[in-house]
Image (cartoon, rainbow, N blue to C red):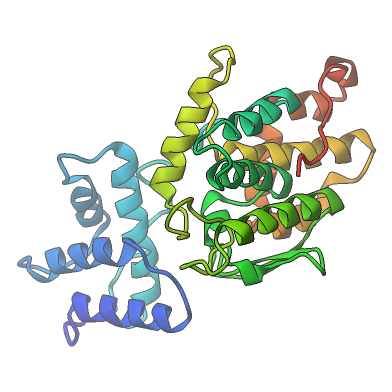
Length: 317
């Protein structure tokens, strides 16, 4: 193995290159640099499968999934720099198990979505903007399938109600996408814009969804706390898993797939369009719904009679 360059310097070069390509590095760079320092400070400076596994597991507060995440982060980078550091091994993917465990989605019914949006309208202050902001947020997630962060990041200029489109700038994968809106969604967003203009003629923030008093962008933590308040005020039975705000996005995807299957469309042919609309980097992320939602299991198996009481609802916005 060549020792002309330290592993730390090679890792820094790798992430500098990725940053120039527009990648958002988040915590991956910090983890891999910790490993590189660990190797450079060791006596032999050799990188083996055992070296990576021992390092990945050497965190007292971490779980097995966290160890798998550390392992995979290092594995990916070592594969890229192997050409510059002869002797660097190619490590097997998934050696420490899965990095993530996806929770089964909760699929809202029409009545549940309606009750959630009606509960939002009971928020204080009376005749203020806040109730309409949360009603619009819930409806937007359900009707368009946005991620929560994407909805909160929307600027007013991104919502073109004349063209009937919504622009998502730099989604989770760092890409932008232009989404068409149905007429009912356009109508609801136009009504919200009218209310926010009356309340905040010159808002402090460029955001589309505004806070009540400061006219600033909604905070993710505040939104989740408010949703838990709304969920507690709705007289639902105690479902398992407990509904999350993000499950409105899941509901959108399931509703589209159900409609396709019921109408006899070729799901494989249609799936890339849904993946692009939802901002998935791979169709595999969208196909996940076919295995995660029991209702879709029944349809795939041809058991249409089991779905007589399960009807996809139309967008609520």
